[in-house]
Image 1 (cartoon, rainbow, N blue to C red):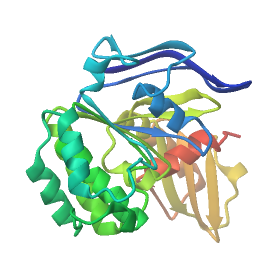
Image 2: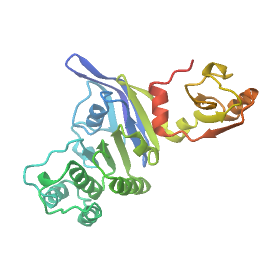
Image 3: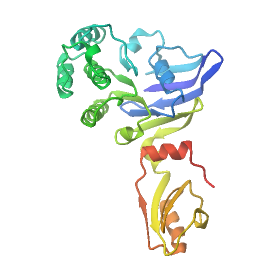
Length: 290
C-alpha cells in the first residue's frame, strides 16, 4: 500500500502541491489525473523518491521512500521522457536493469519487444517516440516490480500497442502488484483503473474507488413532445445539452428518483446511459450545479 500524507512541494515561490493526501490500495491500477500543470508529474517523482517533499510523508508498506534503497528496489518509475545514453540498445538497457532488479525476466522483455515489433538490438535513438515508449514499457514489465509508477504511459502508442499494454497492466494487478499512472488520457484509463485521485490546484479534489465515484453521478437522455430547456427540469443538473427535442444531461442523486421526477414532463422516452471517466472528470473540474 502507498500512503501519501499531507505532502507539500514548492519550486522557488511557486507552491505546486498543497497538503496532498490519498492512499493507493495494493493490487490496484491507480489513475492520477488532472489538467496540465496540476502537479501530477511532480507528485509521481515524489512518490518515486526522486524528489523530497517539503512537508508530509510518502510511505510504501509503511516505509518512507526518499533515500530508502530497500523500498526503491520494489519500484519501477517510468518518466515521461526517460534518459538513455546515446547509442544504447534495448538489450544493453535490459542488462543494466537486471543488475538493479533481481526479479528481471529477460524472456518477458524479449517477448514484449516482439509483441511491439521492436528490434531490441537496435539503438534506441533511432526509434520513434512511440517505439521508445514501448521499449521502456517492455523493460518496466520485465522488471516485475511490486510498484509500477508511469508518467503518461499511453503517449505515442498505437491502438494495438495500447490494447496489449492495458492487458499487461490488468495482469500485473491480478498478480498483486500495484500500478500508478499519471495521465491526461482519461479514455485509456476508464477500462483499467480501479482507483483514482483527481489533482487540481495542488490538492486532491476527489478520489477513491472509481466505480463508486462513477455511480454517484448519472447521465440520461430523453426526448419530449416539445423543446425542453435546462430550467424546465425539476432538479439541478450538472451538464445539459439539447438538440431539438432530444436532451442529454448529467445529474447527481438517485437515478430512479431522477427518472421519476422527469416523468412529470411526459417524455416520449427517458433512459440512463453510461458515463465514462472522461465525462466524470469534466463534471468534477468544470461542471457546476445551477
